[in-house]
Amino acid sequence: MRLAVWNTVSIWEAQAFLAETTCHKTARNLYQSGWVSPVTIRRLGWRWRPAELQLFPSSSRFQPVLWAEIVRFCPICLGLGFHSIWFQLRALQQCPIHGCRIESSCMACGVRLSQYRLTSCERAPAYYCVTCKAAIAGAPLVADDVMEFFEQRECVEDAFAPWKRWFHRAQCRLAILDEHVRQKRTGHLVEGYRHGLMAGAVQVLAPYPARCASGLGYPVQLCSWRVRLARPASFELPTRRGFLSGGMAQRIYQATLRALIQYASSLPQSADVPDRLVFCGDRSAELAGWQAERLALILLRCAFEQSQILDWKQDVAGAALRESALIAAISSNTLLRVTCRALIVAAYLGFCWLARYHICNGFLSRADLATAPDELFVSGRAKVGDVEYGVAIVPCHTLPESLFPRKMGRQNHGDKAVKSCCD
Image 1 (cartoon, rainbow, N blue to C red):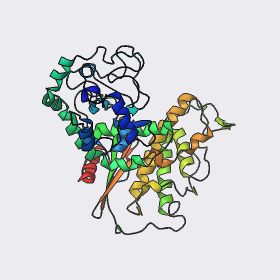
Image 2: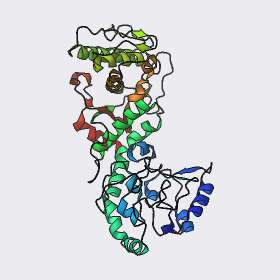
Image 3: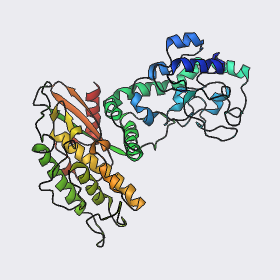
Image 4: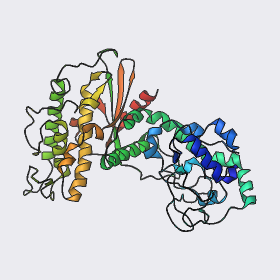
């Protein structure tokens, strides 16, 4: 549809374009930058200026969070030969032009459309379903109606103008989180959790315009900090053994863990539920009756400590940290107390989410104890002069204020930190 006959491009010309611009000559991801350019527009004879020229590669790492994997369309627009990249936004639920629902299945046969990419195996003409060969919009295109619609180009652009303004604003406000997202390659469960946090962060940092889905992502809070760095930016990371597993790092971990154990102990629990997780082969004992907050402590300790801790109340004295447990807390070549505490608390809240999932399943495998702490840590940091501004995205919670350092603020301070990072 993006390379369509109404834009003077036939299916054979589109496949030739694919063969020239794709290494494997099999598929072209239409979210990637570089596939469309002013040269491409002139060469293919398009009568429209695609929005992709301004959208990508900016915040390209937010593709799984912001953009849909499959084709989405407005039935009326598609019936008039028009498709916009803005229809691919997950949050957009109604067409800004006609107000009708955005669809993702063929209106004739109901089959879900394919992924939003150009492939050499697509043999159906533009705007027609590969499965049933009928018009995806439910009715074939009428030339007079199409030409009349495209003559109203300014009205169409005005309808999408709020989304363009929103995206450019979101680019700036989400830029500090982009670097963290691009570094992670994890399993589907943890990846889904992190994407939920990111989608919730979009709702807080850059709220969507009208006609969008309000239930995307998890309800989140922003935990932010502002710290004046004592050392210059040229200070190099110490390489002596134990920098990330002893001294200040170990003391911060132990103090935070004691506070979390005290918090979990204050919650009501059935008397017949053991404090220790007992494995039977690769599976644990029955998790019925377990509280997520207590099971999360076991997951947290297994992630941070060298030994496998299966008792959530076990004494923290002498706990030996993994060398890489607090690697995500390093900022400006310095290990800061506030980022250490933010990492531990954010990881604990992430493990609470995972614990609820495991409790619903009724069991826990030993492989589930191997989740790294930084996989659950969604944060952004920026240095302005000798001051570091940072923000961590965490799910809404009921943890006591004492678990958060004095330098770390809640929701009301998070927006100021993000603005400082963007300026």
